[in-house]
Length: 248
Image (cartoon, rainbow, N blue to C red; front, side):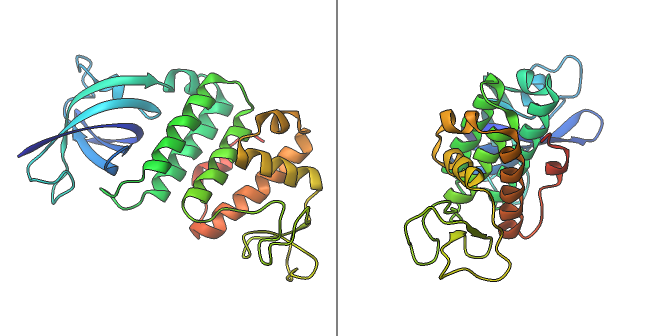
């Protein structure tokens, strides 16, 4: 029997029995972890409210084996709040739908339980912090998170130099299969031809240039979001269900 301590973000909570929940978290050191939280649905629960989606928490797990991830689910025995992002996020529909898509995406990129995904974890914490602060449009925060998640998982897109031959940009022809924009010589059938402003926006979101991203016109936001969603679906091989509810 072993105790483990880690900090993580609550991705989702499922009912179990009459008073318990199965909590799915993305943790710093153990990647995705599913654990049972006993009695958290009771009104007198000491930490039930701390285990809601979007919460950044310090949690202690009890496992019956020497490893956290084993044959059975570990138990959540202690929880302390690090940052209650949920309060600000759920109060606004745009933030809530964007945040839900971020949680689902993070879980998809960390499918294997117990395997560390530190970069994905840090991206999620930073994304939720930015979303909760309300300093930028929620869908821009989401697109920045999606692009960076793709990048840290080996699917970084190029929005300037040719993704195939490296020819310096700007280049206009965007290919999902090629991983970004292509020059006229490398162009393949089926390329999209987004506006130059949209490509500048996506490059700014990927690099964290919020001054450029915030100054972009809404028509380019919508075109950029469509490209990001298509690029994400191409690499995940199926879409993120909650993306359909995101405000554009």
